[in-house]
Amino acid sequence: MLKLALVQALAGSALAGTILWDGRFNEFSSSTDLNNWSWSNQVGPYQYYIHGSGPVTQYVNLSPSYKNPADTVSNQGVKISIDKTAYWNGQNMRRTELIPQTSAAINSGHVYYHFSVKRTSTNAPRSDLEHQVNFFESHFTELKYGLLSGASGTSDPTLKWCVSGQTKWSVTFDPDVWHNVAYDINFSSQTVAFWHSTGSDPLVQTAGPFSVGTSSNGADWHLGVLRLPMNSDLNSADVEDWYFSGVYIESGSLNTQIGSGGTQTTTSTTTTTSPTTSRTTTTSSRTTTTSSRTTTTSSRTTTTSSRTTTTSSRTTTTTTTTTTSTTTSGGALQSQWGQCGGIGWTGPTACAPPASCSALNPYYSQCL
Ligand SMILES: *[C@@H]1O[C@H](CO)[C@@H](O)[C@H](O)[C@H]1NC(C)=O
Ligand SMILES: *[C@@H]1O[C@H](CO)[C@@H](O)[C@H](O)[C@H]1NC(C)=O
Image (cartoon, protein in one colour):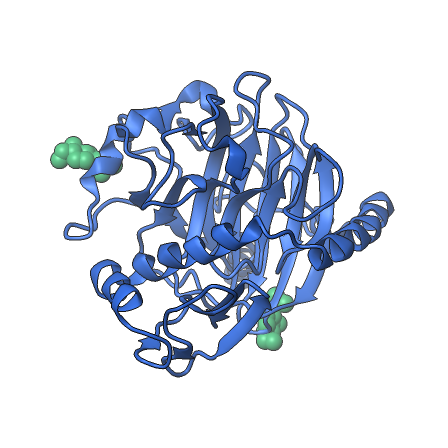
């Protein structure tokens, strides 16, 4: 009897993940609680500093109506908005992003980054511009939406899962459909995979695993959206709303159920399915991406080089920003994630060990 109970307990713990960090906003009375956080007072589940000059309610709002209704663990979801004021730190990309505030080991071992994402027909994201959605600084796993920078055509209505800029899976981003996602990241084996479902369906692995440099300092996953600029259109009056809910990071076994994060046991039957149709989509979208990568346009220069400021100021705001603007090439060492080269770059070109400078494209090299 005791033995049976033990076996059941072990089976239960093996199937239910452990929540390392919870970003479901259940303890928030409103988005203004994000203002509790500052560089000198790093409290709450989120760092909030990548946004435009307006008040927090111009960019981030919470409501029960903003969550996936299938998610009964979350009290509310978040609406993240970008408008013509959403330029951060002198950049020309519209950005509203939240970053997990935690010392938990969200950047080691085998972990799963969970969230659901939706758009509506109101303030719909523009399909003619590239968006980076819920991304890591080094872009080893992320969603993208819209026409990728350098791609041919005039618009692209798909939501894409990308690994180091290459599309591995995509789906049409229809309005009012909740897409449930888990980024499957094994920091030990340096592999990533992608799990997806819609509505209340359990997550299914739809792509991966792929080998990639899974580098993260544990404070560089951005919940939210970065829209690359169309330089002639910086003052466009359009507003975009993005909806997210069920945000948490889990270790151990993947919880494939929507809305019962880490608390219930799941059967392994749902977790091993890999539909053939998704595989087909994967292959064709990969081809598209490869060609778009080789035809990068020059408008990307401003974009990528200004992204450096983002990266470096993230870790050590004051220090790194000062270093970047005062040193010349060959001077100080760039810190991990910072820019270290590319056309037009005049900052440091050497990286502080153990990072080394890696060229991601002609316009951007990064300390990885
Ligand atoms: C933010 O601070 C207020 C005032 O101290 C507190 O009541 C609230 O719970 C805090 N919010 C979060 C999410 O911690
Ligand atoms: C993650 O990677 C480690 C190291 O390669 C491996 O031992 C482990 O089995 C992987 N985990 C899973 C669940 O694949």
